[in-house]
Image (cartoon, rainbow, N blue to C red; front, top):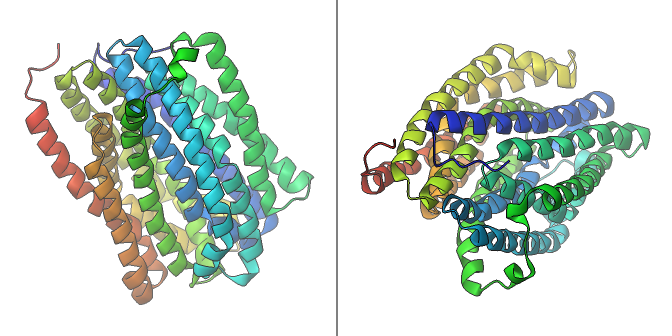
Length: 447
């Protein structure tokens, strides 16, 4: 059900919008847990390293798609907030055209580059073939991921995070069911994990499409809505593509870091991969609150309720900050036991290295919380320049860790890459939000 976020308590609206997102993102990370558990425990540490060393490339591909589709739907949310029904439909049409076209181009360019990139990253020979097969299948399935992400982001732009989360969770549950069947039942090994993802995306897209056609009239695109002007496409592209680019820039930093990490051997790769799985679950609430701010901001900006955005940011900082402290405490105290579940009690060195990663990162979660809030708020306003610059700062910080810290401190240097990137990105975002708040939010408090 569509939800108007321009009326009512900002804190309540953001919280109840974010909670389904947290649940859905947790389900998504549960898939990653299942994937890591099956690969690590049944196929071994080398197989886990093969999947883990492609994580940065997956981040590059999927991150661009998720960022782009989220950005494209900003215009949909603004039109919905302005009560412009035709604008919502035409925006949905523009989102469909741009997201599918860009994803297809990304696949066409990416597939021939996979093996050269893995070679450039100094991927260990013993895991090279499995890594190449895995990421090639993921790359081929990017258009499916883009289509599904586009549909769920359009639903979310109407203020319905619950339905979007149900759709996302349904696709992930299918993926979780397919995973052991493809890996173990069919005996496909590491590539089976990627094939399971592609198969689940087909089913998820069909379910989402037919549900929208039957139940969400606001997104029923008419024939005339497809007659888009260059201006309409550009208005969407100038928000969506920079947001995709921001994710890609961040991913490039992760790729540079992965190249340096690969030189430390399979154990370091496996420890980093397992710890990242735990870390990804911990940061989900922070990401979810940020995503909630994007929709909340877009709708209120479309309705010209600027003072409500100011109040929403303040409330979100308190809520997301509390979650970040709890997540940090859990990872620091208990994260090592979760990593042990992935790789087995006998892999004491891998567990110890993974625990180090979680402690270093957990201490900076509060910075990450602010980063997401300010980034998504600015994006909800249609601003892309500073968030893009912040992404470049993340790239530079991770590159610095790869070039200087890993060479000097080894695996410990890699653990400091994320905190350095978060701090480097948060500084310009904080300054930009302060300027926006001062110049645009000079309005009485919302009633």
